[in-house]
Structures are given as structure tokens and as C-alpha cells.
Length: 327
Image 1 (cartoon, rainbow, N blue to C red):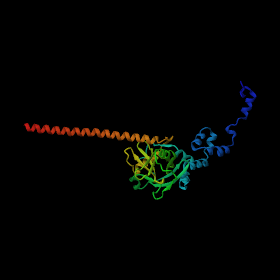
Image 2: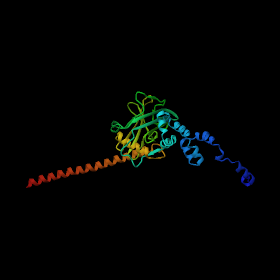
Image 3: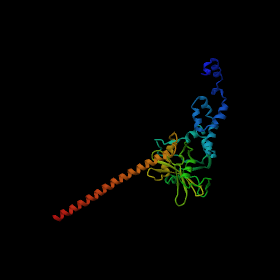
Image 4: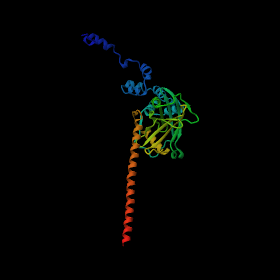
């Protein structure tokens, strides 16, 4: 049986002496050549392992680079200026925006956000198709009372995407798997941000007549609302529309005031791991279906009661006529 270094005390001492620990590596090497090669979640995990990595992983330029790589729209001057006001700058922004939101149980009764900024990025594989920033004024009565909708692309300014038109189920599934969209809503006053998109597509729909393709990136916003992001493509696969809407469990589009309450709940809420494959969207659809079926059952019972009352009224009237006839 071959011997090991442990069988020879001197060899074991030599091996232990030559072992390199984390403290032996120069901080500049860790910060410049190691951490910069990691994705944001990996950097955050590394920061929890020891105090040295925590200090090195808190470097603002590192998180700025990570945010710009994850969301190219954060390069916009307006967005950069707002992120600089966050408690820990780009690190706070990443912590807010990367996971999925969990709507706060205590929702604000009177929303005070006067402005929302939408930072939107659409990818096909690793290729960036669209990167836009939209500022939305929320203090006006028109916004609060009108149906909530934020548009990123004007239909007149279609964006060429270089994506193959889906002709069958296989190409639809391929398109669904390759497309990735982030829609980060930023509240400058609260210095908070949240990604309201599902990240990956949850559905690809083709209009039978016009041939337009709609790709949905919807996710549940709590128990009672759905954040619906729809990307509409023309037959030449140009991005014609990118919009965000909110709907309730009855399938009705919510107005600005209601949507702002939901969004503020998401902005103030805790964060959790993003559900993959549209799981949150499917859970919402399940609750929506159960609600609809409950209403149908309730309406059915009400109809039976109404029919019973009508029958009772007819029988009563007949008996009354019969009684009068014989008296």
C-alpha cells in the first residue's frame, strides 16, 4: 500500500507550511481579478464568508460594474444619479432589484410617490435588444384615475431585434426560453427599487389574423394583483410595444391609484429568491381561476334561489286563484 504525506511527519509539516490561505493573497488580486469575475449573487455570498471578503466585496465600483452588466439601463445619467442617493449606492440597488419582491403586508393608504422611474432591458440570449428608461409622473389626478399603463416603445419607433419569427410550437418555445426581460421600478423619493418582471417569458402568443407575437413577462404582485409586462412584435419581429399594466383577480385593469399602492408595497416589502419558470404567474392564474369558479357557483346558487322564489310565487298565485274560484 503506497504511503501518504501523513505517514511521514516531516512531509506533512512541509505541506502545511507551503499551504496558501486567503490572508496570503493580496487584497488587490482578490478585488481586481477574482471578485470582478463573479456575478452579483456570488459576490453577495462571498461577502458573508469572512470579514476580509465582506470588506472587499463592499467596494462601490465593484457593485457599479455589476449593476451596469446586469441592467445596461442603469448607465443612463438619470438612473445613476438616483442610485447614488441609495444608502449603499449600487450595492443597495442590486439588493433591491435582483430578487423577487414580497409585497409588504402593511400597504400605504395614501401613496406619496410623485415619480416612478422604469429601467427596462430586453435580451435575446446574451444579446441586448432594447434598453430604455422612462420617467412617470404619478402626482396628477389623471394618472391616479386612469387605467395604469407605462409604455417604453412608441409604436412608430419599432426596434429591429434580429429574432426569427416563430412559425410552430418548437420555435415559440425557443423564443420563450431565449428572451429575458428586466423591468426595474425605482422610487427616487423612497430610494428603493424592485424588478416587477418575471425575468423569463411566461407565455408566447400569436394573433391568428395579424400575425403579431406577444411575449409576456408577468409576475404576481402579492395575492391580489398581477404585474403584466407585454412585448409586442410585428411580423418582421420588430419590437413595437413594451408595456406594463396591473390587473386584479377579476382580470380588470387597475387604475393608477390602485397600482401605485401595490407598487409601493413591493418597493417597501422584503426580498426573496425569484421563482423560476413563471411559477408566480401560474399561482396567480390558479387563484384567479378559483375565484372565477367560486363566483360561478355563487351565481348558480343565487339563480336556484331565484327560480325557487318564482316557482313559489306561481304556485302561491295559482292556489290563491283556486281558493277564490271555489269561494
